[in-house]
Length: 244
Image (cartoon, rainbow, N blue to C red; front, side):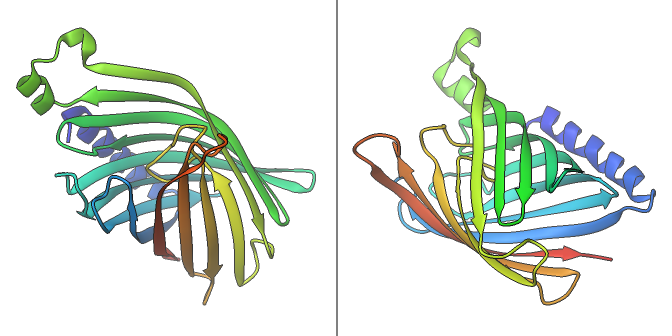
C-alpha cells in the first residue's frame, strides 16, 4: 500500500473519531463475493468491510477489500473513502455522494478513482448519474523490474460517465424487497460505460438495526454492441448493522 494512501486513511479515521463525538450513529457493512470471470482462473472470493457514521442528513464511510482467492498476488486489494448528503425535493429523495477509491489488482498496477454522483429515489425507482476520473499507476515493483520511464508511469481517464437504473418491487422502507439494477458502478469497481452489469438483489430486515442482503451480478462485455460476450458473474451475501 502506498504511503500517501495510508496517510489519507489515517486522516479520515481521525475525522471519524471527531464526527462520532457529535452524536453520530455508527454502523458496519460486511459482505463476501463468490464468482468467476474470464480472468479469474476459476472461482474467486472477495470480502469487504466498511464502517460508517451518520448524523442527520450526512454520512461518511471508509472501508477496505480483501482477495481471499484470486489470480493476483494481492490479499489487500482495495480501500475506499466516501461522503454523502441526503435531501428531499417534492416527492423524491436524493443522495449526493463523493468518493475516492484505490484498488490493487496486482503487485504491478494500482488504480485510483475519484468521482461523484447524484442518486434519485422515488417509490419503486432509483436512478443515479455522475462522473469519475480514473488513473492507472504502475507500482514501484513494475517500475524497477521493467525500467518504466517517468513519463509513462501513469495513464489518466477523465470524466467517465457513471450511471445506475433500478426498479424495486416494493418501497425501501418495507421489511423486505427485491429489485433489478443496470449499472456500471460498484463499491470498488467502476466499469467502462459500454460494459454495464445486471444485478438482481433482495434484502430482509429482521430488526431496525440489522439489514441482510443478497445480490447476483452478471457482467457482459460490449453490451451495446451487436455481439455481446460473457465476462463474469458473482454472488454477494452481506449484512448492514446499525450499532444504535
